[in-house]
Image (cartoon, rainbow, N blue to C red; front, side, top):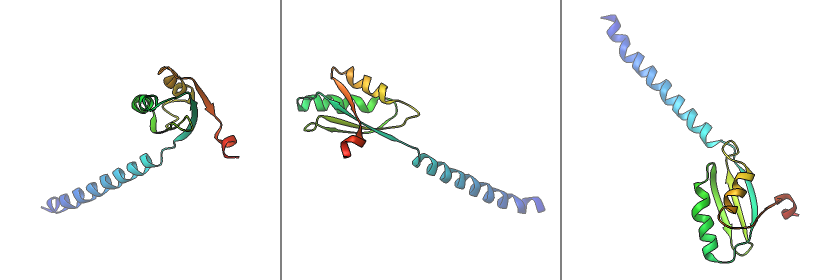
Length: 109
């Protein structure tokens, strides 16, 4: 009979621990590091821009892209544990574009 009294308390504590663990896991996912790289790409028209915007997000590790047709640049936020700058460059080159990495430190000066 005494054991029956402890069962609800046990389940209450277990549920609390599972909830705390899930919240901590979500925090860790949000704080994953991403890196940013900018490429100069020989885009000429909106179709070129659309081609990059359609295909590049499917590359592994890509989190966000910004394509600027006027400046002819593609800025990519990516997870460095899943891809590299070289792989991203190759994936744009596979779309028949000439690609060159831009050093953003020099760009800001």
